[in-house]
Length: 345
View (cartoon, rainbow, N blue to C red):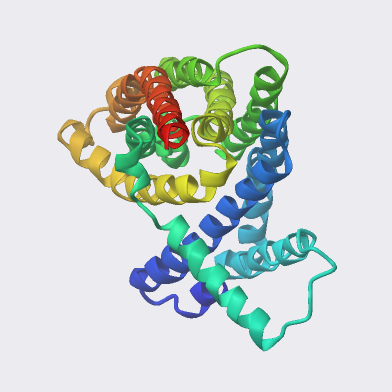
């Protein structure tokens, strides 16, 4: 983020500094944070994930106003420098995860650490889980198609408000979305923890509700209704992210979480990269500068496509429960068969 303020003469440098470097850093932070929470908590995992993740939503709500203020006071460069400084506080919080009684390094210990590091990298980048478990493959496909459109309603907020002619800042929309996002993560984490509910089917319901609330934003004709519908969208957006991690643990257990999150993050990132340009190409035909009808512009079409794809992604989730139980039964039968052979010998 600091480098982006130095190499500011070309958009291509921003692709590297903000897009590649900052993107990789934030991705690594996100994955390791989720893995740590998954390891530490068992019975109340969903609630723990909801609380741990709610900061993303609340942070978006707060920084929607702070960032605008910083840009006005210090220009975008000054704002980026300050934000980079604030982001560096993650070093302090990350250090709290480190065990205090770490053994002093020796040559043998160094070799073990290198072997452990290589083993972690190998497990995280092992894509064999995709064809070993068909249920996980379907889950990855669901996440891929969802990520194609997941961030579209957020990306277009500012331009959508400008085109609507309300003459107001989009910061309040981000605030409503962010607060609702954080609340949704805690709420559905609590529901998953305290009620006897199948987390997969809860995720299916939440994803359908997510697509439906995205479509509702097309019905907003006033600034207040836009705030309301984006708040509803934020609740189910946060719930979807929270429940995704819980369903993964239910499917694969904690031992495979690093591997599973690495694979899903790879496909999610790729989908988020190509999704907005694909949607732009899909709706470009309908873009008409002379069209002043707010309900028939490119943003309304984008929202409609996003809603349909979000709801359609559920089709990949429905067979997962059956496939998961089938695979578990096959594995149990194989174990029983092996024990029988040993007993005979």
